[in-house]
Length: 183
Image (cartoon, rainbow, N blue to C red):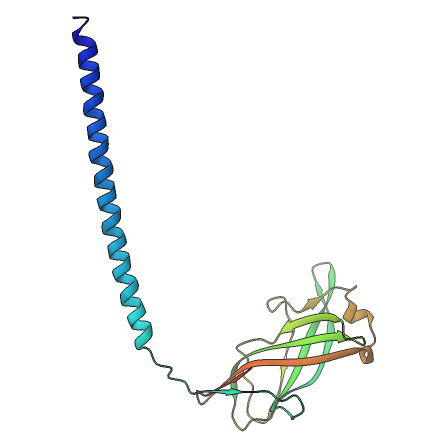
């Protein structure tokens, strides 16, 4: 009996090892099948992306800073607002659209610099702004568009004549479906 017990134990361990090897090979087969399915899905998606053609005409423009751009900064300012027990200053930006068509979306930033050219602040213009053709538009600063300045912010402390601004436009989308992309 003492001899049989170690024999049964070693047989049990051998069967366990064989079963583990079978389980591992089944797991590897399952993983290979999953990888094959994923590769097929990726190939299908790549084909769909390749088949898509740009339906919106895109005109790339080299922006010459000496020219008068058709979208301009008219003015900027800030107004005091109270949120709970705190005082903030909302940064408002006024733009002029000199195009003969309405702008429905844009990718643009307004940079603020001091007299020495040092960076003070940079804000995005609200991307889905609708700016009518040949009209002005005020993009109001809110908590949502992250244009609230604290009391001690440099822009609040400096005199307006000590602050230079630069409107940087990357892309404009128009109501007629056309786009301008600036490099």
